[in-house]
Length: 539
Image (tube, rainbow, N blue to C red; front, side, top):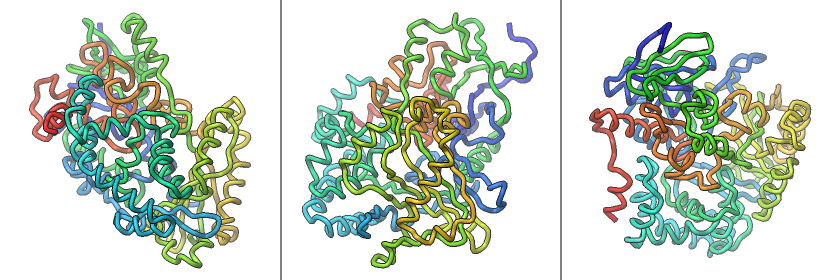
């Protein structure tokens, strides 16, 4: 029996990451009274912006910064997040790959301008870029976007529906390749190959893995570009919390769940580490990873052995962990390449150290061995676009690098190596932007181990909360049987990045989970889009 009740709610959500907050806001709009429990002292998960305690006024986005197409997301519009203070900027010069030679490869908001820049290196590749964009525009609009915004359908059923249309058959054909195979087959210039692979693949999947070849043309056809939130990424978290509170929901911080309570065979509440009990009339939804949900928070007797094994075997992304270098500056980085390309100062994302696609296998080998590969890094100077993130006349900048979680076989080695590698990274950065040697006022670094310590759901430093390989995609994400946001018990749901469509700041796991929970409760939701199956049937 449930005792010592601290409150009764229609539902309880575990973890106040952005997906959980999206879910909670939609449920509140439907009239449900929902409480979200968060162990940290702030909501938003990776939507973290800190004010440097050593130098007040210097704001750093220590986890999430580049947000792709957030202002186009349905939940951004439905929850009126701009009204709540989440205002997005999308710089015209979106990405620059800077070579040691001083040449640059450019991505712009304008596709034609991007293609013209590619043509300077290879006219053939620029035409290939145009051809694949045209071929994939209907695939992105009619298939991939609707699928990402809807609970997934069984893989066999999806394949059968796709095979009925030319667009579907092309998607199936291209998906059979790995990103590396697609790029090597279709493009000729090594710098263009490297740039496409980085921008479209390295951050999410092992580029050697078959099944993801469509990622390259899909992003070429996407209208979503890299964006930033004015005032820092935490402004989106604050806006989501405001949307939750406006609908009557609550977020209880510094509250660690101890166990999910089960009564009469259904999820019925949550007991916290301090002994408080919060009852749930209808559901408990977890924004945590599968090990936390099924192995740590549920008593073993309530979880079938098959589910325990599947949760235990949930795999994390080898190349997802990030090392971050954050700078306080008197002046923004002034890249040597800007002498011949003065518009480089307006580039939003800057990639350094990437010269050839053959660097990718080397990077993966280093991750597998737990060693540090030659530096390839990317980042931004946020204050170029939003002066509010530093004191007047000052700047902040950062660079990220993919580095192994188990450094030399043991993640705790990062505690010894972090400062040294941060210094090395700064030296490499200064080779491209020499003024940094004088402009740096202070700096600090964050390692993959720091990520896991700050966000325990990001096990092994995996900011995507689960690999996309090992079959952990679509209807089988996080694993077969749990790919529709429902747990094995009545009233138990999932809503985090371990679910379809996966990690990064998309809010779509929460958006899709809301569709499932409201449907199960028989509540009307006029915002719900056509299902993935309906969209595929129309092809």
